[in-house]
Image (cartoon, rainbow, N blue to C red; front, side, top):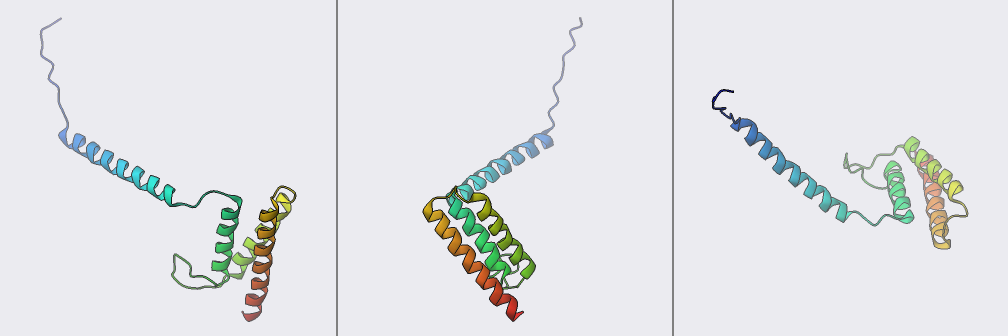
Length: 121
């Protein structure tokens, strides 16, 4: 063995980038946690409300959050309504009375709205 001194080299630029990335990662993680706290409670009714909102956007009753316009997409509206019909069939007998009533009311209203909008188009 020789008594050679091993010199340690530190890449300062890499170290600086790693520190910056760590800060960005921590901020992103914190932002995601804050957004998660702002989300509504997960429930069957909140899921139905989410699908209903998508149908209302597709049927031109609400502004599309991306385009900021009320556009009608009958194909998308019908698809979501059909999805809700399927979901209603698959959950039959597994919902509380209140959930079943809410579901039926929501679905009926969306189906009537679809008919009215499709007749205008």
